[in-house]
Image (cartoon, rainbow, N blue to C red; front, side, top):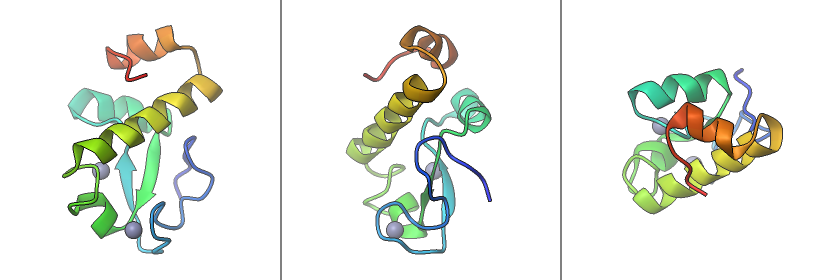
Length: 93
Ligand SMILES: [Zn+2]
Ligand SMILES: [Zn+2]
């Protein structure tokens, strides 16, 4: 199972606990997805909470919430804001 630096438990959906999870790259888009992958900035989400209307790919508010969670985790465990900005091109905090 993949590990994440954002959450401890990758075995169930972050929102509802459904054990059928997909891996969501908290910061996505072609280049960013690879960097998110490298730093384990991923989240476990069920199909509904991933691709549905309450998921980050359909809902910009939820998308931003997960991006900010990822940036906080990065700044907590990996590097500072300057490093984050260098990697992803911007800061969301
Ligand atoms: Zn769910
Ligand atoms: Zn996703």
